[in-house]
Length: 447
Ligand code: SAH
Ligand code: SF4
Ligand code: F3S
View (cartoon, protein in one colour):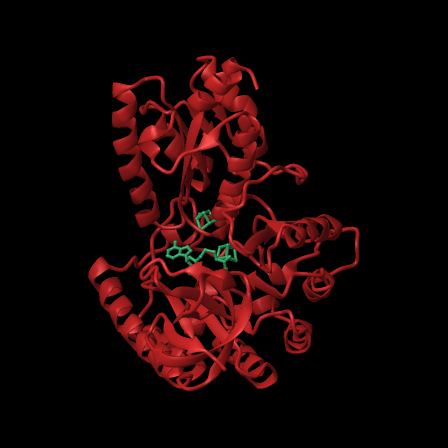
């Protein structure tokens, strides 16, 4: 390598700030791969980077606020050192009102969720000083692949199986920021997973906004359970996870595949959102509480030990005390292993944002508190029932909170911390649970 290119490489340092869901985590891996292909290398400290990329989320107001807070901090650095390049992408970049705000900020590149593959060219233009560079498609084209990527590492990898969403739940911005639903070609998915296995990955998580509708619109006659079986043929991949499932599309066939295929983990994330039929209808969710409960009971009956996790929104417009009580009732009936709980946040352009009877924040806050207290109690009870039992775990490596211990994940997606030798990271072993907490378990290697 010549001295000049050494110098250039040292000059090109990037840092990615990733917000939001697994889709964005995965997109950031692709962004990293593309930038490394242009001679950039990653730095852990954003202060040392000369290219800072925001990969943003707009699912709730709080998510956008976090991004704007950080943007304020980083644009202040840029005002001191104008050679820094700031790129702004992800779901917020898709929204015209956000782009309007960004016009007044020293942001060099704005790129949409459908334009990630164009990043090398956009960065080059910014390096040459043609700023601001704005490239945001509002209509999806064909899926572009393969794209390079630099994975976050470890033994577990995210794999996109589809992009976008067609469901238009009335509160949700995602269909506007990610475009219509497109499924990836199954052979491309399998090829990617074979390469992951060859690189030492043991677990894959298949990603989509509604994985149960995988395959719609493809030439191949394939559905999501077929894809699970196909992926399970890849040697070296020991565990398969997927997220997220929509209750309206959760089929008997999927439950059967989860029950029968030993590589498919006994965990499913199925967002319930509300326990009230009236609110579910206003949310445009396409199912009833009775349907949800029936599916949950079938999952529990046919897949021994299955963990069910969910998302719940409180304070949707017009949610009355009796609707909220029905949500609490469903939480008690289903007994979720874990739940992400949110206060409804109006997103401009969505149907729900224009609905009457928006609730005051005090009511939302009180309901959220009541719901989380109930759910934490249930999660702790379920976890305590595991004390003394053995779980199969995939060892991830040193625990972040206590590096003298190892952290691992059970098939049911529980975090289990235990003492053991460093060299077992990546192995699947059995651990006996000795102590349960709400969000994690402690254990010891089973003999
Ligand atoms: N496609 C996934 C959800 C992706 S968004 C699914 O349907 O399972 C993740 C979660 O954020 C949603 O399930 C919902 O609970 C929450 N969410 C989405 N929009 C929201 C809003 N406007 N206010 C509050 N929570 C919201
Ligand atoms: Fe949003 Fe509904 Fe699509 Fe999930 S299924 S991404 S909640 S519109
Ligand atoms: Fe994900 Fe947030 Fe976009 S949840 S799809 S990054 S709006």
